[in-house]
Structure formats: structure tokens, C-alpha cells
Image (cartoon, rainbow, N blue to C red; front, side):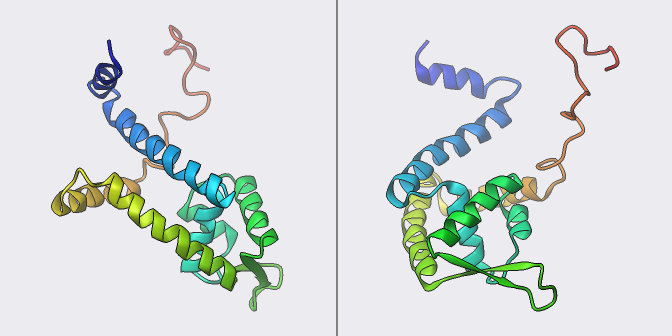
Length: 172
């Protein structure tokens, strides 16, 4: 069985929807992240955080976690890297001095503009098999999934809900 036949078999399985989404996301990440890491020495969580900071000046780190779900320690390292490179700065909140607000520096804004330009071209490349109407349909359907409760929450995969094969009905 060749590689395409294997993919076709996976995309015809009972897990076809999850496997297809994973394949698209992981495939794009392999290309995009590799380029950004090699070109800018920056992991995906750092450039996505910079994107949020430029778009929403004064955003808090915990708000970035809502936009780009990542563990707190991963985001903390990304913010530290951006700050070490003088791409962002933290300022105490006027309402609560303990709270830090994040702002892009001019250098950070320039760098993100460069990354955005190549990312827009990558987006066009990735979605080139779809016409404008298909892209919009894909976008609307993906937004519906993103807005649904099942993306970041689960009752199906909670720890302790399932046991090893053959013991599914035994209480844990």
C-alpha cells in the first residue's frame, strides 16, 4: 500500500474527521513553524503571542491563552523570549499594579509585519485548492466548531473515565 492509499484509508476510517483536521493542522505547522523557527529563531507560541500583542495592545498573558490555547509555562517562556529580544514590553496595569499588560515595541511590530506578510502568502498557498466560496464555507464551518463546547472541553476523554482495553465497563 503506497502513502496515498494509507492516507485514503485513514480518511475513510471512523476517525476520519479528527484525522483530517490533525493532518491539515500538523502539515501546515510542520511547514510554517519550521520556516519561522529557522528564519526568526522563534517558536510558534512566541510569534502567535506577538500577533495577539500587536492586535490587542495591553493584552494580558492569560488572555492570550484564550486566543491560542497553550500551557501557562509555555506562554510564560514565549513572553520572556519576546521581552528578551525587545519585541514587547510589560507595563503595570493602571487598575491593578500587580497585573502586567503587554505591548509590542516598534521592533516587535516590524518583525510581526514581516512574519504576517509571508504568512498571508502561506495561507494563500495552503488554501489554493479551494475557490473563494469554498474557503468561506470552510471558514464558517471551522468557526462553528471553534465556538462549540467540544473543542477545549471533554466529558468523553476525562481522566479516569476509561480503562485498558477489555475493562471499559469496570469502574475506575
